[in-house]
Amino acid sequence: MPEIGYDTAVLELFPAGSRVAADGMLTVGGCRLDDIAAEFGTPTMVVAETALRRRAREYLSEFRSRWPRTDVAFASKSFPCTAIQRVMAEEGLHLDVAGGGEIVTAVAAGADPRRMVLHGNAKTDEELQLAIHHGVGLVVVDNFDDLDRLERLVPRGQVQACLVRVIPGVTAETHASVATGHVGSKFGLLPEDARRAISRIEHSAMLHCAGVHTHVGSQLLSAEQLAAAVAPIAALGEFETYDLGGGLGVRYTYDEHPPSVAEYAEAMAGQARALLPADSRIIVEPGRSMVAASACTLYRVTTVKHGPITHVAVDGGMGDNLEVSLYGQRFEATLADRVGGGGQVSLVGRHCESGDQLIPSVPLQDPRVGDLLAVPVTGAYCYTMSNQYNGARRIPVVFAADGAARLVVRRDTWSDLLSRDV
Image (cartoon, rainbow, N blue to C red; front, side):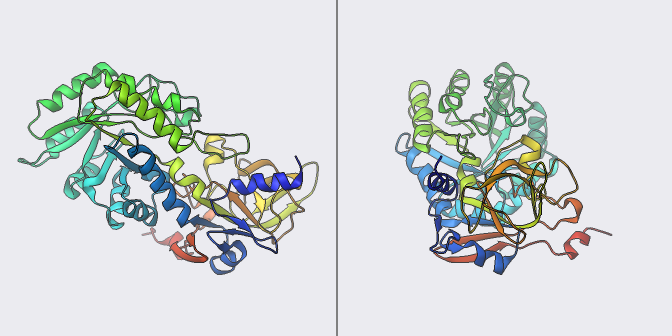
């Protein structure tokens, strides 16, 4: 591929609106990445706020134009940062929260608890008490133990609305670690058990069956596969709400071409028109496809080691991007002031693990110590799974918009590493 074509290709992976300045420096959200590095250090996650907000609006528009009674619930687990949840709430989205911690951050973000959906295959009493205390709108019943706990914890005279999670029996074409809809999944109930759970809720004085929920998996590149989960829940009967889950994949690499939001919405709404009551409400729960492409991670090259394989090491790695080690997820990268092209190198992290390899083989133009390097499409699950391995300090999150950058999550301090000691 000609070098200019390659440059164009890598730029397309960065948040919408990213540009290359006249001197060759990559800009995100109108901000030069070298300026961001100078102000906030490295590694740093940079979120293009305008691109993020446009994505939220796109989801609402595409789904509601096809099925007016659609609510889009952002899957907070993909980026459970208070500032991100606040953006979603401001843009009119509901929030899907997976556990007590995400309830806490969502409340801190100013989100309306009535517009939250609580998930979890192993909810504790404490988490359910948090949900009940704050008035979380929908609790997804994943198992019969959830029902036992809810019937014990919901105060007399109060009614908690629930959705029953159903295993649709759809085997996702994705990494096994993020497949959720197959028979044998740890999430949800098989249809016959789901019928029993629905019946039990319908006969409960403190619970209300608002509907059913399903989910196939994550990083799915086929809208038809996502839509295949509608029929199994439609067969359970007529309800006021059908939560169709999320799972739409994103483009991490040059060879991936996921459906657009419009194509995804058309596939889901088409199934809804064919199988669901015309006046029912549907919920979709995008996570990865909502936030992944809105962010990139900025690193500093610390070491270049030549040999049979050229290893380029940066000042981050599996502490801020565990997706590579956990799922084998492929990313791309570029030097911030020499965008695209170059010879193949192995991009590795700073952590004391051979598995801390960000990208096994990626082209970089003459990488040198001190260069800034940017990895696109890091907005989903990287912040979520950040850690302090080897005493690394968790990295900051910076919002960039209209040429201005602002800190929304600070970098860990050295004192933070000791803060839990007693």
